[in-house]
Image (cartoon, rainbow, N blue to C red; front, top):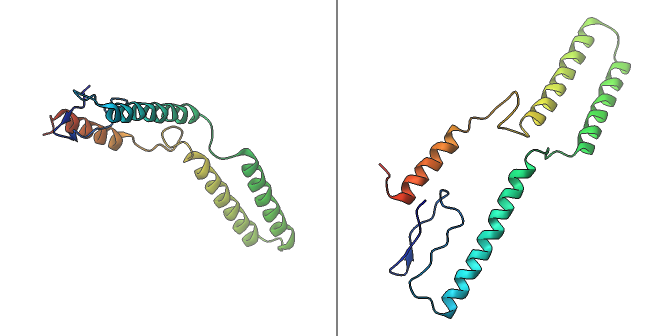
Length: 143
């Protein structure tokens, strides 16, 4: 991993490939040392928060009471429509199509809550390409 250095009062840009590395200057006065220690504390807090978010991704971000109320609400709406409407083939077909549409929208909401796993997956290849590119910038081996 590349180490960041202080050169002529400017920092070499940091990238995602070297988290947690704060440059150490050759000679530090009291103010610079205080700033460096504060930067290290902040980077530790950020990395802890990052790992906390990664660990919590296994849980759904949609609260269960919301889903229960939403399904109950849709059930009441479709039950009311079916009780009020006349009994013929067209009405039953329209109610069936509307119920399937509502079910598909709920499925999409739940499937896209975890985009990198499940039946519908978002490719992580663009993210890997960006991280590779940022790694090339940080190490100076960009082509």
